[in-house]
Length: 101
Image (tube, rainbow, N blue to C red; front, side):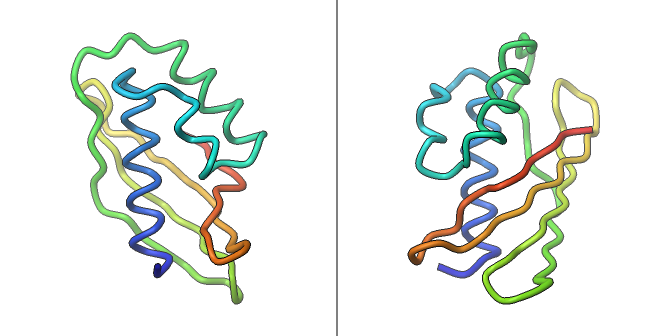
């Protein structure tokens, strides 16, 4: 799977976890431990008023097997920036860092 498609799918799943529509355990196969802890904490602090949506996704490939992503998101009517880093391991893209501003 190419990096853009994988990042889009994984980040949509992450937003569903943020909304409470999916359990955080579903991110275990896509997120490393540190970003998973961060995302669980973010989801725990939020009371969803409306489903979060991804906007435009920008992807950069700084080297082979690494993708860095910047996404605009709408979370509860507010535009937010989301940044993530993905690394390819054993044929899968794995989120190794994530932050929402």
